Every structure is written in C-alpha cells, then in structure tokens.
Amino acid sequence: MDLWRDPEPDTGSPARLERIREAMLDSMALHLDDDTPGPVVWTRVLAANDIQTLWYLRSDVMGLLSSACGETVAASQMSRITELFRDQVPAAQFASSQRRSSTLT
Image (cartoon, rainbow, N blue to C red):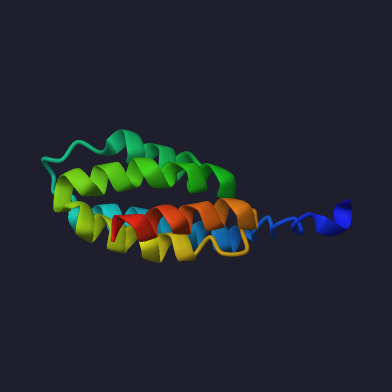
C-alpha cells in the first residue's frame, strides 16, 4: 500500500522556511497600516518553527489582509504565498487549498 501513498513532502530547508515567513510578513507589512491590529498574527508567523505551522497560519493572514485591503487583494497575495509551499506540504493538502481558492474567483 505504500506505493499508493504520496511521497513524504520535503520538510523544507531553513532557508525555505524563512522565505515563506518573510513573504507572509512582507504581505502584512505592505497592506496593514499602523492602526490595524495585527500583532497576534504577526507574532505567530514570527514564532512558527516549521512549514506546517506556517501553512495553517495562512488562514489567519488571509483574514487579516481581507479586513485591511479587501478579499480580492488578499486572495491574490495568499495565492502567491501558497505557491511557496509547493512540495513542502502533502500533495492532498495543497490540492484542497487550490480547489478552495479557485471557487473564490
């Protein structure tokens, strides 16, 4: 049965983890002003120590960006960030994320 399973995803190098983290932080910094409450999400992204944690924080970042700059801009930013996770999370997880984002457009 192991032959039918997806191969284990690349657990990611520290450089890849940092690239994803920076993309998430840059996106928030670009679209949030000083009056927008966001430190909790910001802190969680900074504290994340693995790819899976960042993967699950995408929804928090999306919610924050949606309220700050609108769902269309937020979805565009998150689509770019989500692509950075390719080969980093299980294929089934990535595929369900792609299905959800395609229904939004």
